[in-house]
Amino acid sequence: MKTLYFNCMSGASGDMLTAALLGLFSSPLSKAEELNAIGIPDVTYIYEQKIDKFGLAGSSVTVDIGGETEHEHHSHHHFHRNLKEIEEIINGLNIKENIKKDVMAVYGIIAKAESEAHKKAVSDIHFHELGMLDAIADITAVCYLLDCIKAENIICSPINVGSGTVKCAHGVVSVPAPATANILRGVPIYSAKEKSELCTPTGAALLKYFANRFGDMPIITPTATASGFGKKEFSLLSNKLDVILGETEDQDDKDSVIELTFCVDDMTGEEIGFATEVLREGGAIEVYTKSVYMKKSRIGTEFTLLCKEEDKSSVISLVFNHTSTIGLREKVCKRYVLKRNIKTYDTSLGKMRVKTSTGFGVKRIKLEYDDIIKAAKEQNLTYKKTKRAVLREIRKKRENG
Image: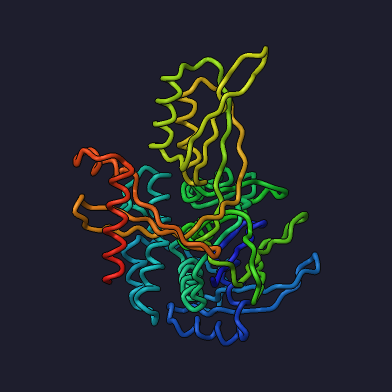
C-alpha cells in the first residue's frame, strides 16, 4: 500500500509541508513550476535546497507575492478575506475540481475552528493571516502535491505544538493558539524543547484533513524521503518536517487494539453482567472476566476489554461510570485477523447469514448464531438439527451456483 508518513517533531506549517512534499519528486524544481502555473494572483513559489545550522539537509519554499516575501507582504498589507472571497480565488485557479474541493474543505476546518474561538458564525469569520495570499498558496500547494502523489494511506506522528505565546491579529495568545487547539481536537499533541508556536492553524488543518490516522510510524519500505524547513531557527531543535513515501503491508489482516484491564472485589454478579453488556454496546470489541485473588485473599473479578484507539476515551468513561474500579491499566496490542465476508442466503428456515473468514492459508465458514437460534425457536427444532439442515441447504445452493 502506497503510504505517506509525516514526522512532526518540530510541528507543522503550510510552507514546511509544501517543501517536504516537493522534495519527494525526482525534479522538485519542475514540480514547483507546475505550482507556479496554477495561477494564484501575484504568487511565485521559490524552491531552494538548504542546510540548517545543525548541518541537516532539506528544502524550503518561499512564497513571493508581487516581488515581496510573505513576511514583507504581511508587514505592508493587511487583507481580511471571508470564506466566499477565498472561494472566488480558488475557483479561478488552473487546478482540478477535486483539488479545489480539498482546498475549500481545509479552509472549512479553519473557519469552524475560528468561529468557535471567537463565538461567531462561520459566515461572519474574516481571515487575517490565513486570508493572505501566502496562506492560500500553501494550502493549495499541499492539496495539489498530495493529489499528484496519490498515497493510499497518510499517517502523521503526534504533533509538537511548541509552548509559550504567539502574537497574532487578535493580540498575544498562548500556544497552541485557540483556533489551532480547536483544529487539533482528537489529535495526539505534545510540547517539547522550544518556546514558540511550532504548529500553525494551516499546518494543523492540512494534517487533520488528509491524515487517515495519527500515531507511530508503521513498518514501511521507503521509496523516497524528504525534509521541509520552516522559516524560524531554534536553539535546541531543527525546524524541519520529515516525510517518508513508501510501501506498507495491507492492513486488512493486521491492526492494533487497546487492551484495558482492571479488577474489582465489591460488585455483584448482576452488576458485572450489566456492566459487561454496557461496555460491549458502548464500543468495546470484546469484554471478558475471570476470577482472581486480590488483597487480603479476597476473591475478585478481573475485567479485560479490547477497543479501538478512537473509542478508548468513551469506553474508559463507561468503565468508571458502570463499575466500582478507581483505576485501570492500558497497553497496545497488535492483532492479526482473518478477512471476513458475510453473505445472506434465503433458506426454507428463513434468511441465514454466513460468515466466511480467510487468510494465512485457512478458510472458515460459520453460520450466524442469532439466525440459527431464531429459526430453531420458530420451527421448534434443536439448535443442532437446525444448523445441520441450514448447512445442507446452503451447500446445495453453492454447488448449483
